[in-house]
Amino acid sequence: MSTEEKFNQAAGAVKEGVGKLVGDKGLESEGAAEKVASKAKEVAEDAKDAIEGAVEGVKNIFKKDDAK
Image (cartoon, rainbow, N blue to C red; front, side, top):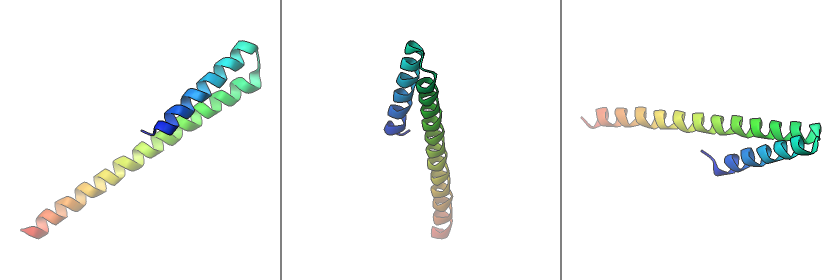
């Protein structure tokens, strides 16, 4: 999980909340969009990390087989 993406999600939530508070639909929508975009990026990064881990696991299996 990226700390930067967590921060961006929080910033988007704050912006969305302020927009709701002051009745600014544009600010509210912008904050919601930032929140969703940051979450999507975080999920993509997590998926990339999981795939890289799986690839390393498969490489290690083949290395063990070659050592026998």
